[in-house]
Image (cartoon, rainbow, N blue to C red; front, side, top):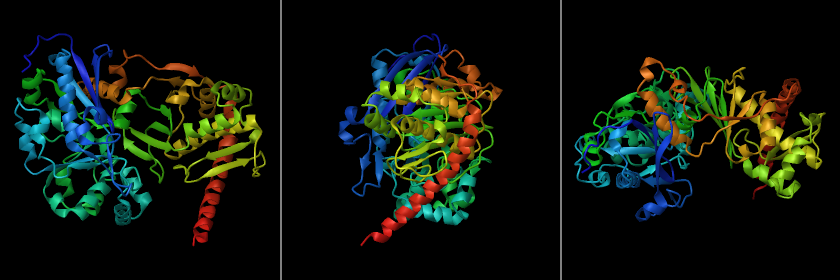
Length: 545
């Protein structure tokens, strides 16, 4: 047993239970990271036999992760911290993030097990028979098409569901996953006392009782009314009976759920007064980690490109997702994902710039803003937004043309990718304000010339931010914020000592006048590309034997 150490300067823990690993960071009162640890599921827990932290079923649609692996990972990381001499008594508060859309099913009677955990046993031994579903469905699962159709039908269509819950029905979303378990295994469902998200499951382990689902992660379930922040009766009824009782009441993302379970004080020497702040999803935690403020936009330029938007008045649509903000109960965050990100940029770089970013950037910076009216769409694989595929080029007179000169092609690719992002962000209710900042992360955020085009298209300054641990850091920041959130202190005030983003690009003078008519044209041409894709695919289907 770890004896309670003498108190010294306070620190805060941020956890991230992601698909492939469990990570923790500790920050001090200056928001400096003072400790980090990781458990990699495949490498450190080989007995579970996961690949990339998951089991992929033979149908390629069903994807799950073993719940006990997550529990054992927590045992391991805490033992690792203990043996490195980490002083748990210093921890004033902790919070965390979980991969979004995963769900955990607790057996009847488990709450009393959680409340009476014997401190001489590791968690995984005490909890090994506490789950009615041993392998949790996660965000990679896409086996619930039938349940999605039922849910949309029950509420009056996809747009209606988006208006209620922030998104149309998605196969990975928790309501549809619960509906599948209920329809295939009603007995298993009837023996389930509580259903958690991965985030609230992790919080439950620290709390020593069932933790509430927070508004932000709860809005990725197709079950929460995002404006009223209560479960939607019509959505609950469409998924499974007596579901509200199994979900518990959702809570604000900054809520203190209680003090840490006595188990951790006795086994590891935590201060019994250490607070557990509601855990949230990994995307919302990243928004907190990047310290987005009203009007800001974060763009991750990776394999796929992802946008996080801070929105005051959301307009839920059939594309993208609207979630409750994890740091401001009056605000929302929107998420947009584009498949043809870095892979498309790399393909054009290899074809036209001898595989060299230096040459690519040189060509890009030699071209004019607006590309003399030439517009291109570059979808190597079927895009999510819009649902289109193929490479489509248009000249200044909106005529389709077969190819562009090298420099026009490179500019058309980058401008087109960013115009699409701006158009679809504005469709969800995003407004560019004078205070708007763009925070860029991911591989392409190291390329100054690409970021200059981003700044020009959005008419906003671009900053870069190091986000290797954004979900973990965001969780630590949220732990600090949770202690004062009820006094209406904003998160940005609490973490102002943390290292800030770096300004890398500002809009070129006069670009707004160039892009305003071009954005309107891009939107009209995108509709043509969408119609072409539909028609082309219909013809392909007709030609099948």
